[in-house]
Length: 198
Length: 389
Image (cartoon, rainbow over all chains, first blue to last red; front, top):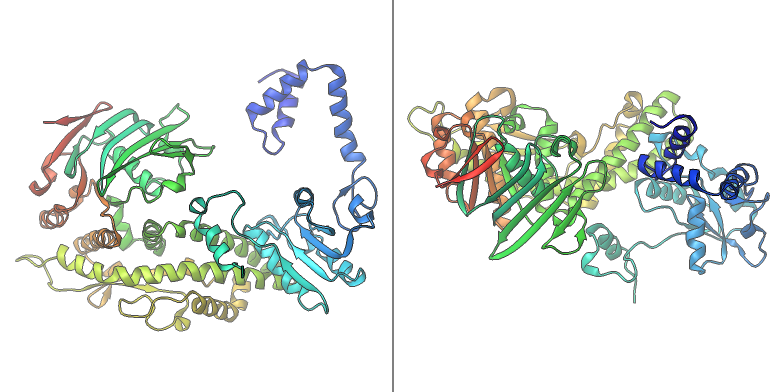
């Protein structure tokens, strides 16, 4: 145990995701040795993330204003909506530069163990949006794990009765640049069952 | 297949151990607490990535150290494969094959196959259905590693659905909850059908071996009690009436996953109210059992101590025959079992396993081990193990 403020800092850092006790200690001593202005900059960034960042009224992504950049961008196709779990998933899809539609961030996945049901996710907002924005296609891009799959199934059931709306899901299969022989059975199995005509 | 070389570092009580083994029988002799079982437990870990004694990895690492290392050279059909595993509780375990690049531990599954006989086996016959489900599932994974994933997925969905049932039961079902319940039903049925189909086909293949192995172990002698009781193993599913006829029997049809999925969904719909009432998941492979029958009566509760042991041995021998049939003959490990058996069963078991490619036996006193298995001998004492010439 270190004295007072140092130990407090280590404890706080240790509560962050992905930071263990050793990393927390390392970061704390790094900050202790750093220039004052560097620490001030970090301090400001921390403060403004809590004060300055809001969630977009439309899609739920992190934003500086009431509407995020993507929702304000008139070049983006409003009829095409990609549904993701977290804001970081938006970033992942944006990096592809393939998608020209808009997003809807659910804020998680169905997870009864943690008490997360449809009411805790931004599902109602999605339904309202489809009703008013003349959306024609919803692409469901939840994580391919137990909770993400369940969320996807739930959304498909919920949205299938909307007239004129097509609901699609991301294909799942083999990673690019990989070797077939190293793929695990599950991924390969999914890739086989989801095969397409060449 | 056989294990040619086993090396341990900081595994259980062993700071360091190094054994060169040969095909055929090998007996490890040492007093209780000297660490014989730890040696064979390490082999079991290489084969299944788990221990037959504990469910977490932490106790496997020698007290006061951070990580344990197990290295096993396995010869299979003339080819030698070196498997290295590093067990580090709280962090990701690492694995290597033939000194190649680091791999995921589950990639080394299948490099070594073992069938382990242990004193705990008696609970397969006398214990709860959970013991027998674990027996089938472990064998299923040994036969087809794909099922390790199926099992994990099923357990995850089961937990999620259970949590939902509990909370919706308490909230007296709002319609939103019911809609998500249907979603979980679908996933439970899909993964459940996959697991169930695997188990049914396994039991179909295993059952004849169990009957034969029991007849061999309990082969009637002059003073062996009521002779000629036939042992049978049957899969008993929570599907009840909805289970398609002939599934899980030797001459029946192979299980069709889609048929089972539909049957599970139907059954789930039928018990829906009951499930909400009680807040637990009432249908699925987690409620099933491997029914063991001797003559007319269920083994559990009706079989004598000796008969129960014969049946437990028969289950392991049947696994051994089944795995041998599929390809490489597994390594047999007999951990302290001879001390548990009467003289006749000892002799029968020794006869039945003496011909195996490799048999590793542990015993506290060498007199417990029948002559058929007197091959190589190692003594284990004071944290050391050495070959006795």
